[in-house]
Amino acid sequence: MLMTAINTELFERAPIRRAVLTLAVPTVISQLITVVYNVADTFFIGQLGDPAQVAAATLAMPPFILLTGIANLFGIGGASLVSRSLGTGDPDKARQCASFSLWTGAAAALLYGLIMMIFRPAILPAIGAGADTYDALYRYVFWTITVGALPTVLSAELAHLIRAEGYAKQASFGIGMGGVLNILLDPLFIFAFRLGITGAAIATMLSNLAAMGYFLLLLRRKHGATVISLHPRHYTLRRRIPAEILLVGFPSFVMNGMSILSNVILNRLVASYASEAIAGMGVAKKIDMVAFAIAGGMTQGVLPLIGYNYAAKNAARMRAAIRTALTYSLVIACAGTVLLFAGAAPVSRLFIDDDATVAFGRHFLRVICLTCPTVSVTIMLITVFQATGRKLQPTILSLLRKGGLDVPFMFLMNALLGAGGIAWATPIADLLAMFAALALFIPFWRKLDLTASVTR
Image (cartoon, rainbow, N blue to C red; front, side):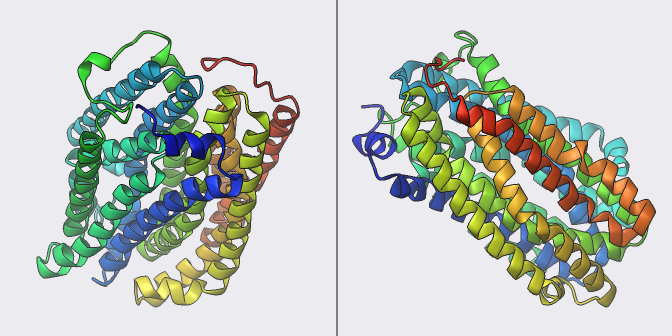
């Protein structure tokens, strides 16, 4: 049987709070572990006492974010179509969706890694590398992207697709296992092997490779009980599968792409002041990823539940899932804002004992953490649009949230207030993006049409 009875029960009949928590909690935990290992890189590199290496790790975020964008393009787009296909009782199409997502995503990852290797002399200076950070940035990018692109993309893609069938715990375990492994390997490679930032990069690559291996073994063990297959015979360009996956996943890719643009401009503006400023911004951005992890975990967790019930035309259950997930996400986000604001100074000093860097980090974190509640709302509404197969609304919101609004405000606040003002662009832009999301979502909520086909 391609979809187990327990998964059908979870999607169709389980109490909505239990269904949401069963799908979302493991996903949130895995996302938080992912954040922890991203933060761990900065933390352990910071113990070297070299702001230039911390700055290099910060500069590496934008090109690494693009790997997440590739994974989301095929993973979220594929997961949405898989869950909707299962909701209409079409496992063959779900299997073809998964095959297309995995093989095309793998090819895109390999191509991106090759491009970064060939064009690094032009790309690295363009994202902010200077004389003191170029070498460290190159070594980090080589291991995490040139070598690590394939396992990074496939591990994330597989998690999305496995979660689409209701296997939230298994998906989260794979991602979480990779994160824990990275945390364990960081001090070994950075300090014991004396590899510095190169060791952090190797640890990241190996942890993603281990996560990918776990998912492949899981699929082998569940052969016959899952629609996810790597066999080439299931790969197809028919039935509008490529268009549906790419159009639904495109907003997530755009969000990551615009995040890259936003981070590059942010880094270049802040880097014009001092390495301590960009290192402090890096610390703040890493810690603030906790808010995005919670919002992302909640939305990725409930996406299959929303998509399945949308396709099955169960409006009441779909609406209840959205309300429940949004409430939980918003409450946690507000609590996170309070905690991060109150603990900004000591948390920043945990990463590097440099007074100038800590001062920048404290200020940046207190400003950026104000985005937690607005991000939780916007990301949830974008995911609802994606889960139901909408393309235009999530694309608009993705363009607005990163790049469309925050970049102009970065230049404005930099001109008005200098380095300390740049961070204010983020909460201002996210607040405006949330209002735009609500303006698009409210009419959709009121006129929700559950008679649409799975390929709408």
